[in-house]
Image 1 (cartoon, one colour):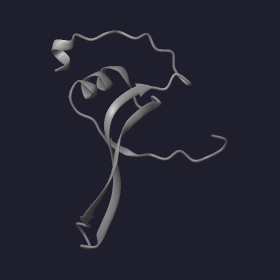
Image 2 (cartoon, one colour):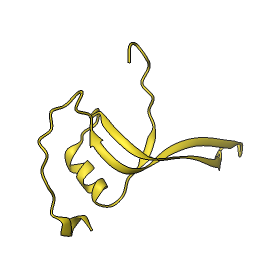
Image 3 (cartoon, one colour):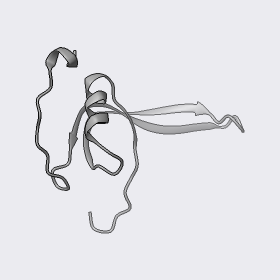
Image 4 (cartoon, one colour):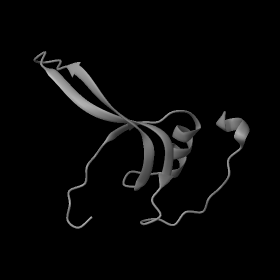
Length: 81
């Protein structure tokens, strides 16, 4: 990771993972995300030209332990469903 520019990737996360992420992470928190990378195509609103972009549809979310110390806390599984 020496001197490389970071790459920002838009991602989508749902359900209890989204709720726990909102409670646990803040802007700048380094995450480990596992999911499916999908390419999306849409027309530009101003010009009508075809645009493409990628989103990661997340299955698993974690905090990078390289940059943070985390105290795991189990959640109520009834809430997670």
